[in-house]
Image (cartoon, one colour):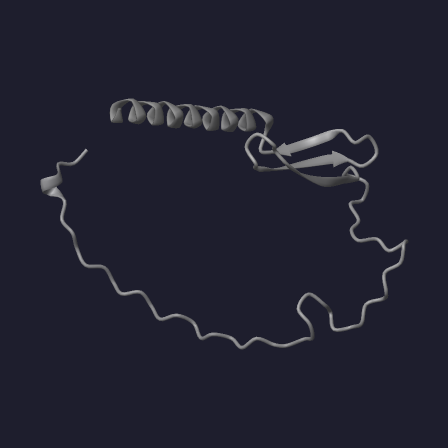
Amino acid sequence: MSDSRDLSIQPTQPVGGASAVQPVRSEGSVGTSGSPQPEPDEHTVAAATGGSLRAAYAQFVINPDTHDVVVRVRDSETDQVLSETPSPEVERVAKYLKDYANTLARHRAALRSSVGN
């Protein structure tokens, strides 16, 4: 390890100029290949996973205790919860902290009202 008195700061070489900006080529609407897409019907496939992913859907729920949005990913066939964000543990901590804050607010309000009398 070197002593800080031995360190010296030297100038560095300037950074080279930036490359020229390339113009954007318009090829039709964003996200399309320019060719018209067929009308969707009940047999149209939105995405293919090659069979490696479960068929699932997202469920959005409002937690009645914290009023936070909870996103649950559920299996389409069994309705089993595959994942949940935020996790149940985080939801419990949030509820505990909210209850604690409410208790402190009530306690402070009681102290203020007793001092004012």
